[in-house]
View 1 (cartoon, rainbow, N blue to C red):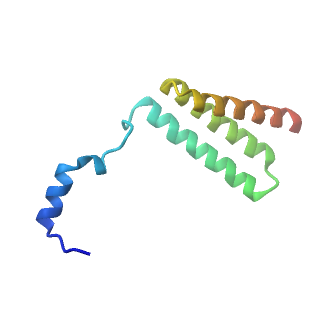
View 2 (cartoon, rainbow, N blue to C red):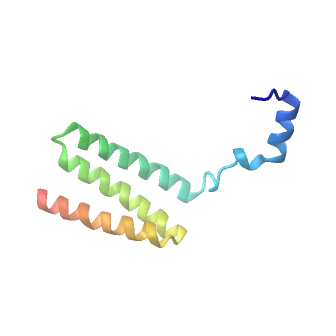
Length: 99
């Protein structure tokens, strides 16, 4: 491994600021929705792992998938629209079967 001085490293970073920049913009409507939806999906998975909380799992999962469906529509990403649209239908079927 070569030794790089702090000055050289700072110059490399300054020339390649893409290394530290995010691909998607921050603090926009879609940014907030995707992070909140992700927390709901992770909560859903936690309920699934705990076993015995099926309705909670399905409920939190549905809210999370709805959030990601909104984001995918805002982004006009057909693959995400398909994935989240089908996932939402499956989760709704699961809720209807449970109640």
